[in-house]
Image (tube, rainbow, N blue to C red; front, side, top):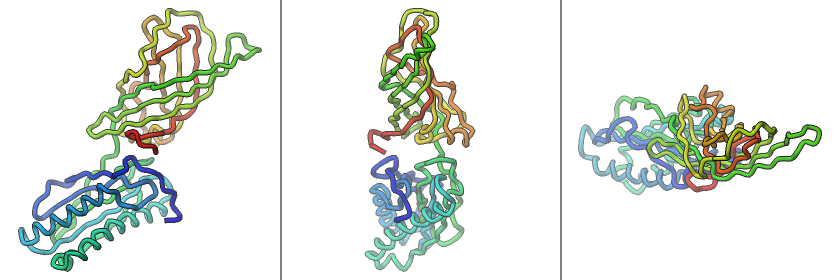
Length: 312
């Protein structure tokens, strides 16, 4: 795959969503093998373990049910990043990688091998939402008896329920000599964003931005929220953890009595393509220090550093 630039996916071991099209029977077994690495077709350990389970399943139900033969339906998918031709080829490679693993296992089962045929489809990114999505770096595998192919199933496309906390913040101000009370501002921060849906992932993001700070009349005592408190928020449409990468802004108003929130606004291209925005927008986040008579705003970007503690 020399034409591809492999990057780590969300998990080292890969993930398996079982029974998306219905529960297992002697006639039907179904799963989505997802979170292949980005721009890569190599099955991961969770995928390989499920393929071993498929072989055991066919041996177990070989003489049970409507007949002895099996059809293995394989659908290859890719995320909607890169060109259409690129992702058509990538979805084909992922399907072929899973099929090759199954054919190698069937070589060791001479009684089973002649009873198994394959049905293949390659979807590219045709059904994928914008951006990287682990559920579309995938191959769906369905085992049936000969007959009509299985119906397509919706693939999860993200979450609408999130929480965020400010982990660290460094704000630097450079006075503007010709404008009393004004400063050129630079913010560097770490944010933790967590998907609150079942099985959701946690991401660590770095924010770097630049802007201005201006003096305002003192409004009250400093009383920033404690470091580490999570703020719950939602999105109008489902988004993936990686969708938070990109353009963002960070606002630090003066502390007003007991109010010590800063605000994070997501302004990137993927949110725009998905017609999504956060609720509230911007998102209040607890800060741990404030200068009570300075108003500052920076624009920059969020970069995803880790998913569930694993570097990306």
